Length: 217
Image 1 (cartoon, rainbow, N blue to C red):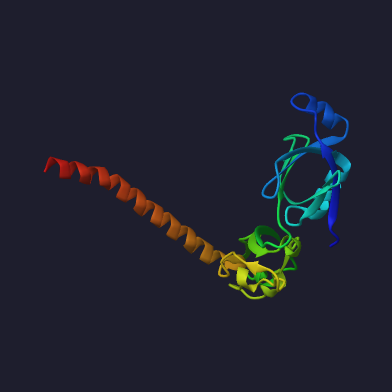
Image 2 (cartoon, rainbow, N blue to C red; image 1 turned 60 degrees about the vertical axis):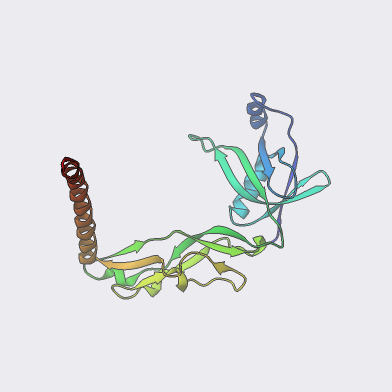
């Protein structure tokens, strides 16, 4: 993917004036992190929305402010709770030569034919994994092919996912990503959880009595 660039300028509108700024098609952005001071900036909303759509929260972009450039990752996107209109974006400085940790979303494709079996269901247990890589090497997403789940009780673990050679997985390789579970197995798991909860409750109820007996002695 080509490197994404975004033009920005220093923001002078503060407080209540920010609402008028947004109405004029300008969105406040904030850059912070190592390598420079915190910057209160603003950018054209249309261009900012386009840039966010390309990089998401896993790819870097370069923000140009006058003659300066800031290599950043999206840290937080604030939207209106009802209209989802873009309100503010926080950007964090990163180094082009230093590996960082990032959460990468998983995209599920294909059909788990093993879930067609009687008394079986597909469970998607994980929707993102943590990786370590240079900012420019972080995948935008990782594809999970559900077609490999062709048998009852088959499973995909984090360690089964294919990553580029430059990317290191931080998530435990044994973590379930997706699996086919027999309904009977689900019921057994629920029964075990319920039994453990009941045992814990009984132990908690017995503790005060034991304490009272000990104090009376």
